[in-house]
Length: 134
Image 1 (cartoon, helix red, strand yellow):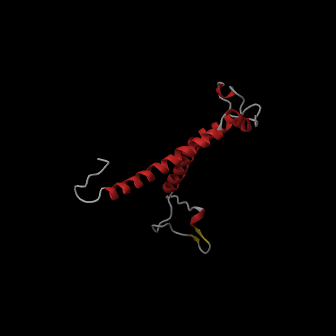
Image 2: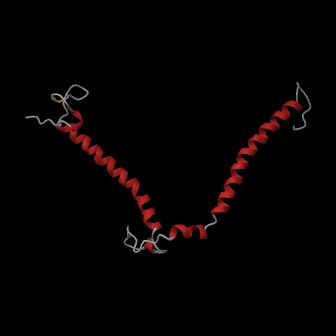
Image 3: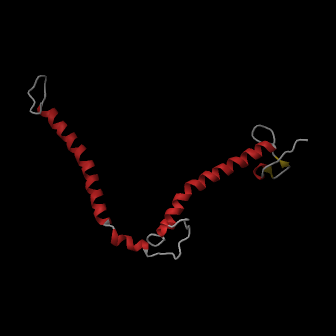
């Protein structure tokens, strides 16, 4: 005796069961495969979320509390003052200025190189012309 399962998304409003895409109802093996796929996807998602959750948990701990063994996922007590305190420890304004300087150089240097190459092509025109760059 073959057991057949119909998913809720396969139900139709009129006559009950609707066939799957290939014209057959979903068998028990295909339902088990779908369930296994969802379990694997959920496990992988949790594995990718764990470092983010540890980061968030560590940001609310007191200094040195993040290295306690066994690890504590929930800090005792929550230290919400860590977030405003970080601006007094780290010079974010200087980091922002450094980023602006580097990005400006990355924009200006190619612009200057293109401009200089256009000047070179205007000065060194013609075949066998004496170019001042070579």
